[in-house]
Length: 130
Image 1 (cartoon, rainbow, N blue to C red):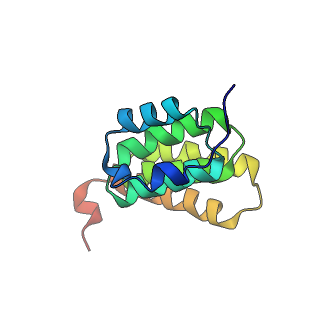
Image 2 (cartoon, rainbow, N blue to C red; image 1 turned 90 degrees about the vertical axis):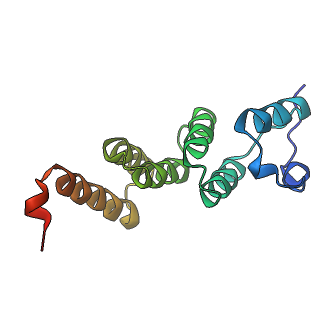
C-alpha cells in the first residue's frame, strides 16, 4: 500500500532540488510518497527559482495528471511556459485554469498578457521599434 507522507524528509536532504529530476522521481518512488497539489506546486516553484524551467514543466505535467482540476497548477504551468516563450502553450494552460476558476481576474489578465506577447512576437521587428 502506498503511504501518503509529506515531502518534509525529502526536502530536508541537502540540495535535493539540485538533483536531476530522474533522481528526485526515484527517491519519491522508493519512499512510496504521494504528493499533494500544494507539494507539487512547492516543488515546481523551487525548480523555477533554481532556473530549472523544463524540469518544472515535467513536474507540473505529472501533477496535472493527478490533479486535473487544479487551477493553481494550470496557472503555474502557464507562468513557466510564458517564461520559456511558449506563448501558445501558456495561453492554453491559462485557459484551462480559467475553466476551473472562471472569476479569477489574474488569470484573465495573464491571458491578455500572453495575447499581447504573441502579437508582438508576430509583428516585424521594424514595427516594434519606438
